[in-house]
Length: 328
Image (cartoon, rainbow, N blue to C red; front, side, top):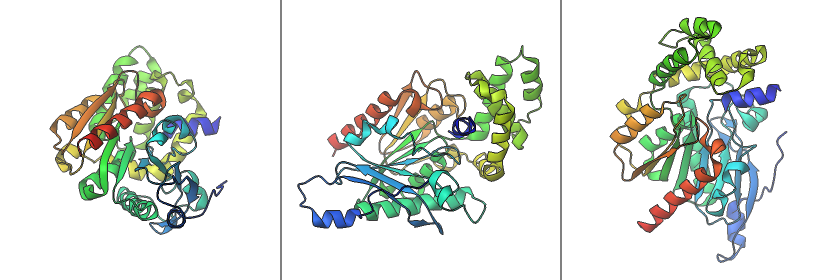
């Protein structure tokens, strides 16, 4: 039960084939597809970090996923939202520091920070480019993963074919303020919810403020566990590591700091997402300058598009790939 709650709150390492892509490529004629299914643990940011590579053809373009959270992993259930994508991409999953299999390998020796994790992201991309002999990759950020992804878009656009921003963090402080007002209105007849939400400061500075917002957001979404003591314990255990990072995230304001992207950018927005405001994301998309950009709205999704509409999610990504290739 605890594992289920923790997975929803955020969103034994078994090595697979360890032969490197470079050795495979050198030993195989170019016209024969090379299958790769392996996990690697390179040194990234001073620690070992877990990277998984899966493809039935080494020559396919790379799509790297950046998990949300912070502190969550997309590795274990990745097949549910990559089973179609793998027909066109080499799929790469990465567990960030203090998350998933990277945490099992080694905890971060220092308190994680946004800057540190952004630097990790750049190192991971460089490692993948070298490992798979790719000049550029496709990059996808989910929720918090966009804090890392948009850093790459801003500083290293030449490394990307395109960027997929899925329910992105754009201006999270404003988003949390909007969420607070939505929840107050929705729970106005609930004495406990009204009392707890009334205590939340609009600057969202404390862990208690964030706990009440997530507790009643999840309750609104029908997740009954959100009012349990177990959920509360899990949240505050998570906050011991990740509260400092999230407080940094609250100061991110992409409309002010990233007005022009140097690569194609595609926005995926859940129509029912109130955790990262769909309104704020749409307004940012309209203002952002990019060589190519497109906004896709998922009518039946909230904050977890890849889980709620996995088939449409994948086919939309593939559709952008076809459009980009047609324009070359």
